[in-house]
Length: 330
Length: 274
Image (cartoon, rainbow over all chains, first blue to last red; front, top):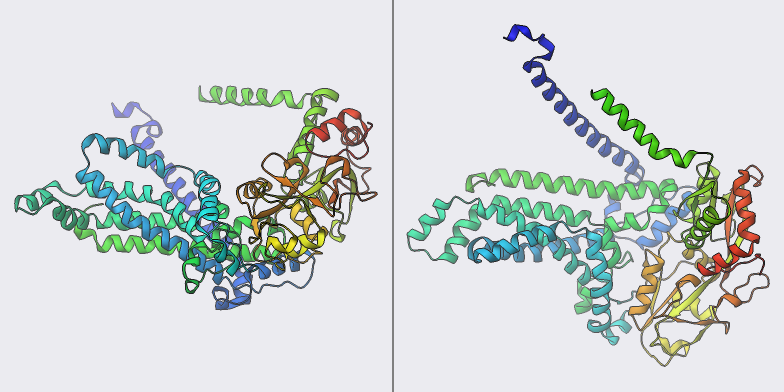
């Protein structure tokens, strides 16, 4: 039978064709990714080379620096590159860290509840709801933040003496660390819950049954066997959530406040009401300054830092998962 | 078989595109976001009622970016909310219509009049309490403004702040709508927005005693202090632009119909027949 088909139309060739086409596609995607990374870093280089490590440090008012950088390119003066991004980095760390910390604990308990304790009808309802929440576009969370949470904090939580104590420096109007952390938590927690619960469900039933058979109670079994063996999934979910939180721009540009101010924990309770602006929203807010070459380099430098931290997180996650592979599959 | 399907698909796609290119002129513009509502209303009326063969594409990417587009030829015209600067070489500014920048507070604020100097001091962080401008509110002022992307920001900077940057306590928001929203929700806020935004839930202040209202908006002579022209920017001396565009500009500046369109969309006609 086989001789009747010319070689190039045979099943063998079609197999090879699929293989080569998919291979070419993958190569194309990897090539694009490399091109992206190279472009970002090449464009960012002037900003890094002028500032050195001081780029990451504190010093001066970051908004004035951005303005001076933009104007020097716009008005054809000698280019200014001086930029100390610490307030932006600090704000990113605080908001991302706070949100990931809160959602890590809450998501873990919610996932445990859904998988191990909730009655079946309840987890059947919760499961799709959480998946839906995880896919809601961030701008919708931003809108809710602007319309509901920000005015609530500004009008009901912040008191007049608190506002007066920082008057002229920053405004405590509700655009705050607290609003940003809360909304970001709501945004990333569903993502974590859905990955955690997949991990918990993948724990080998025999392990849990064995523990129960030995007379260990249900909570202890879940905590010591279930959660422990789902650790790779917990790491994976956390890494994904951190990556989404660091890169979140639109929602944070709407509610975190707009000044390059570094909230100071030494200020006491006011600290959580203080406005700040993380790295990603800084790019959004200054996007029309791209026409000025030094501003262009500075914004790309911010992008490079974001890209680098995202890459670092996914690598860390990869190695952490590999190290934990012995605990279970996920 | 496959080639046939592809050919049919390609032809039907062309078919979709065809009506737009049949003897019609498409004019491409970009620029001011502040001018966008009025410009879009003018475009729509012109394409529907005056010359059905002329169509407009307008990208609101900010006045400064729009002028750059005109300089390098990617746009045939630009909307612009500020006066010409040296960096605009090789373009012509045409006064198009008038707009007023209003200062707004929350309706709960008893204040009704403010001076340019007081506004300057508030946005520079020198005045921080409502009692300092004569409002019985007595609370800390929450100044709200636009971020640097806005042409409105540039105008405010020139007209009120003498080109000094706003203080760090000014909350810079990304859109005029967000500024209005912030003032509506916060009894202690003050913000600025164009005439078109003056709706319920805001209290529009008199500036130096002059109300921010369409009949007081005038640059020559200056009546309301924050009056401004919205310009259309053309390449060169303006004579090289397509005839269709020049005809539209003439219609928009002079005709009575255009005048009503402009005032309905929130602008103030400057030269139109009454």
